[in-house]
Length: 552
Image (cartoon, rainbow, N blue to C red; front, side, top):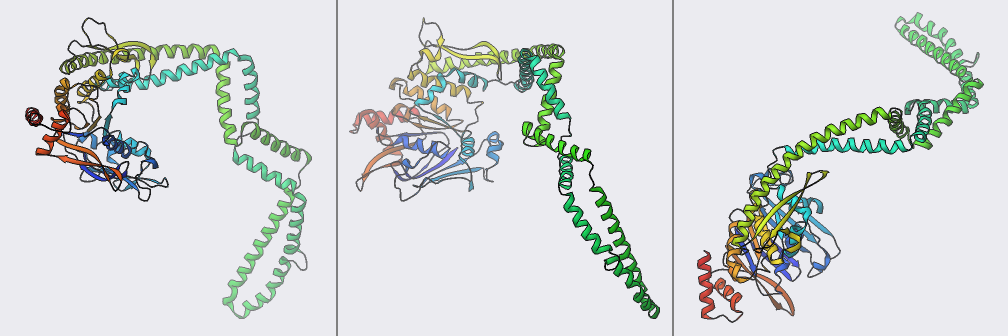
């Protein structure tokens, strides 16, 4: 649940801290007092847009901080929650914005992105305001709502896997059919491309070896010159290193005759001479390898040009060319064996379609059962909320296979006796939409893990006559969820466990919003004023006391 909300330098607010309780919390106050600012702050701290126009004083940062206690075990086991949860099961979200547009978001002290914040916020608070009723009127959302009530027991996961295979086969068949229209042209082109790519090994290692050969070929004269200089220094008959080594043996032998221990030096000199002779031999062999005949030289140049051509056409890298070859070979094999492949894909698609249809039918039956349960709950709830002759249905229509099965769900309603059921979006009024949304929340409460429900003037189109029933329903919701509500109806306000008054005053020539917790007499006076205006009477105060007592 949301335990505390702190707002600094936001909108008309200098600084406020509100402590909420588990259960039913309400915010009341005069129109224009700034109640919606609190909801805007909560939306912002959970990832909605926050820009510099919201900053009250540009000299100071705008700071919004929300503290949540995560009591629900299922919620604590979610990866997005576990990532940030402290040992005492608390999550503190802080968002800071400065006048220069710098935006900082922290969750339990860790800096995060807006995307991460939104992902977390989607599991913490469910917002419902007048514009949120549009979700109810959107037929695309009806499937989402109904499926929350369905226990698919792995059926949907099974369907998703088979559907992915079915879609791949269908795409392959469509692609093959498209290729059949230009079969001969593609056959000629692909044959040429495959033949061209098979002419050379598409290996970076082989290509680098060829480049080294070409470098040697292009620099053979210089290499010859360098080797001859080396051989002259190492093996010249009179002044080369080898000649000098040979001359070194005579004095070293004289040394060993006097001191036998120096014989190891003679072994070292012999080893040096052997290494030098080996080096001279290798240089002579290398020089011999620099003599390229005309055919070899032409082969190297031709292959180098061929590689350059392949990289230009299919590259830029040889890895790209290899990938192109693999795809071209597969396409060529498909075209060459068109009839066989076409028949095979059609048989596979038919088999997968039967399997998909069987699983989809199971999903349809489960949805039909959930739809019947939803019908019973919605009609019961709406009758208690004043729509006495209501009829409701969650109708399923067959559509082409898609990621959700082959059903389309549309909510139908008849709010008045003698009228046929029509799509919800066509006939429901804003007041009825608010009550349908409330009934849906009651139906979904067992499967929806979001702990906090915030209603921004959901009762705007509900008259006072239904306020008591609506307040009772909201309090029922609050028995297993935390409910925070902005309301103008005293009948609803009387059911709250914690009542805040939002007021606006002028300080130092500037409007400011404040939030006050109402208890005892102060709460009675506020409810009385909600009924009779600023000037309360004994009757309105008595009525307010009776209303609070009855709600209790």
